[in-house]
Picture 1 (tube, rainbow, N blue to C red):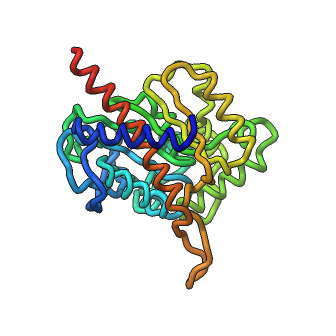
Picture 2: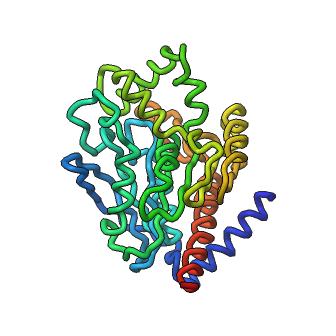
Length: 313
């Protein structure tokens, strides 16, 4: 499908959302409030982007950040929160465990200490309550990069109506987990420690287990429990794009893969020189708007399916 035709369809679906009441809202700026989740003493903190027009049936997106020190405060996630909520979705952007404002585990010695996937399964059960929407409201788990893998891994979580995985980690086994890749894995140990504000690399065992837990390749040849939208940038590495195209072809169920023209890994945002060194700025409004439109169109389809399924009962 040509890109212009796709976005014409997106516009029509978003208009249908406003009529049906599943996706209320417009271009008005959302309000942003603090939100907390207590996971047996480990508190995750984040932001809730509340649409200007809000009701109990408003669809909700749980948006998971990628690997970065800024966690959910990175410009890309703030832009996604603002743009999706401006289109009528409530958006919760939590800082994952050990990142940003969220609590760090008391120790990092076992796989359970880096159980990002388990955290999201809990968050998905608590998200509607935290947002003040009813239990029947549609809930979507979305994520980018590291968060995209975690979102896909939590695909079967209770109450999730669909998953949106934006440029998840790809080829993880080939690059980091196969025998003889210890040196490459050490990079991830250092990178994850830096993201979590630690000055020593994390232990190899827990890091390898965490990577395996959110490796999207685990869905190869399997039937998906809920619909999956896989979004990638056309400017990303060709090997990654080939990998995900082949992987998506093996999945059974409702899977849609979209490769966005003009998009790199950070989808219209990038580091540029600033007055205090390099800083994140919006580089392409077109790409960011296209990303939000693509997600909203797909959410609209899922909301319509959910409403139709409820009417048939």
